[in-house]
Length: 351
Image 1 (cartoon, rainbow, N blue to C red):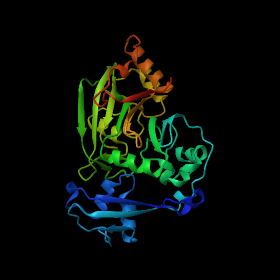
Image 2 (cartoon, one colour):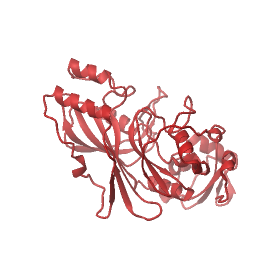
Image 3 (cartoon, helix red, strand yellow):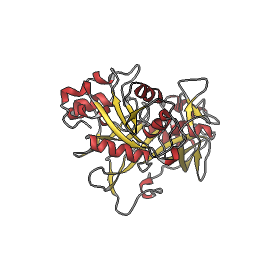
Image 4 (cartoon, rainbow, N blue to C red):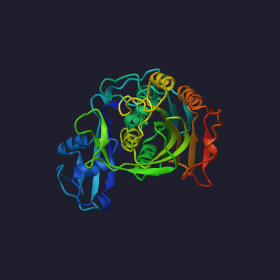
C-alpha cells in the first residue's frame, strides 16, 4: 500500500488490499467471492478490475469466472472511478459527535446523502468530510466504510487513516460492528424475532431491493419496544449491512416501515388523524440509534448512543396520543440488547 501519498495525489490514488479466501467461499467464482469480501464495491466493478489485470490470485492475473477452492491469496488494486477522483470539498455542516486521530463518528440527519453517486455528485457527507478534514483526501472514499440511506438518520463511523479504514472494513466483514436502529413499523408486533433472508435487486423494479434466493445473505434481529393503535416501535440489530436491509426485511414479514415511500404502502388500520400525520412525515421512520465497535488503535470496545431526532420524536408523540397512551420516559438505554461487554466505553450524544 502506498504510504507516501500527498493530498494532491488523491486523483491518482489506488489502494492495494490483500485478502485470503475463506474456506466457506470454496466453489465460488472469483468475482462473486470478492463481492462478498468487499461488499462496499459492486460485483460489476470488481469484475472490471479482474479483466483489467488489477486482481491477482496467488500472484497471477485471472478471470472473473475462476472457481476458488479456499485459501488463495488475492491482491486487489482498487482503482478509483473518474467521478471519485473529482470529489470537491464543500462546506456542509456535519454533526461530529466523536473524533480522535483514527476515527470520526457522525450523527447524520435525514435528507443528507452519504456518498456521491448518480444524481448526487455534490452536497453529500463525503463532500463535507473533505472540507472539514482535508487529510481525508488520502483515504479511499474519504474514510467512509458504511452508509445510511439518504432519509435514514443516525450514527455512522468514518476512518481517518488507511490503517483504521482497513480495520473497520474487517470488523464489518466479521460482523462484529454492532448497529442498532429504532424503527416505527406498520401493524402490531410483540416479542422478538430474526429475519434471515437473502437480499438482492428486485427482479422487475430495479430501483428496489427484495428478498430473492439469488441475493446476498442478510440477517436482521428485531424486538418490539412499544405498541400503538396500528403501529409498533421496534429496535432492529443488523448482522449484515445490505442495501435497504431493515426496510426490505420488515416489509418481508408484513410490517413495513411507517412512511416508507418505496416499501411501505398506505397505512393500514390507522385513524384518519394518524394517516394525515404519517403523510406529513417525509421519510421512512428509521434512525441509527446505537453504534458499537472495537477501536482500530487501542482495541477498546466503544459504543455511541444518539438521541431520536425531532421529527421522529414528534411522530412517537402523535402515535401515543392517537392510542390514548400517556407519554413514556424513553429509557431504552437502560435495556441494552445483547452486545455490550463489561469493559465497553459508552458515549451518549447530547440531546
